[in-house]
Length: 309
Image (cartoon, rainbow, N blue to C red):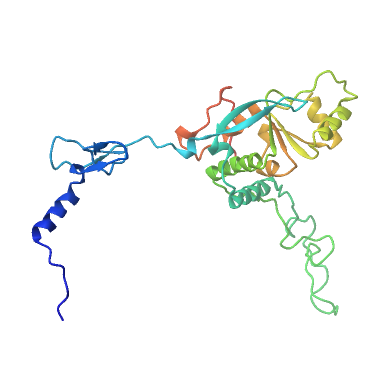
């Protein structure tokens, strides 16, 4: 069965095709006046693509634009005064140092590494060959009706040696330096993200308080600010540091110098109160996993900590 088709001359089809291919030659009528369309193409090219008009067969080329790097962004950080702990100003730190995602696997491995390194491993027992005494046989081999015995240093006898007893050993395990650096900054980032880190602008020092009233003053200061059981990190702790001594004796918190802090200390406790210079020392000391362009360069100088595996 033949299909029904409209009898349209070919010239009309060609005319309509020409009008469709060149819409710029047509006119449009607005509500007020009659104005021609612009001669530019109706489809504007993206801003990153340009074409040259020197050749009729030129192809559009992609222009390299400056794309912002999200890893180089910075995060704000509030600075506090001590001992009032009132916010005074703002500063900013790179997101690669203070806004890292939470990596529980890295933190767990770092805590296990630190725990293994702190084990003493000094337990030591004497083997039967190390026990002082004669090697004479205690009783004859036969005729007594009792079990066979050798010398008095036998592990079966009191005062004898110990079979398979512990000896001094090293429990420390290996851990990649770059992974540990990432763990330290991840712990700081977790505290910062939860609002549990306070950065002190100057030095944490209490002046004008006598030696006998220092412990009471520190306890009341910690209770007033709701920092019971928090970690206080200083850049340097001297022998006559009254604040850290009073903090330890009153059991209101834990005070450490920056070279004594590890990942477990940063994760334990209610909050982390740290001096600005101590925080930047941690940034500069634990960034081996970052490239040179992303590393922190402190404005206070080159105070860095030594890595010990």
